[in-house]
Image (cartoon, rainbow, N blue to C red; front, side):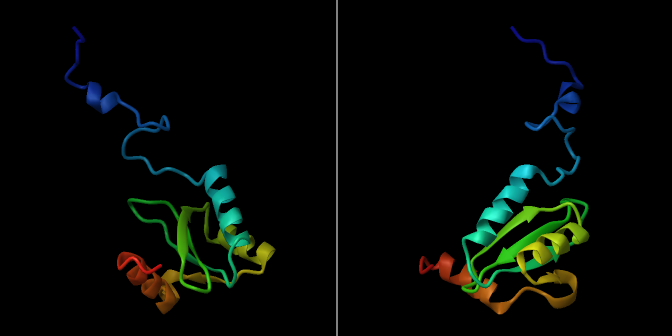
Length: 114
């Protein structure tokens, strides 16, 4: 028989060892994914999403055909450095929004056409 205390659920930690409710920071795995994804596609642009109460700063990489991926990144500055190093333009989503080709790609994927 396993004893479960009244407050045990409050003391539990998530898989990554973080306290529940804390935001996960960008990791080397996130960065590696972004690097590999950008290197394997053409016409890539980066769109930085600001930190919120739910997630840290993220960057969405969008290819020429609208295919996209999203990962955490340390900051807007880190995203700009990432883009500069790879000659990828970097935009702030709050200022410019997402490109139409991203929405079109998502719709095609929903219909099974992508």
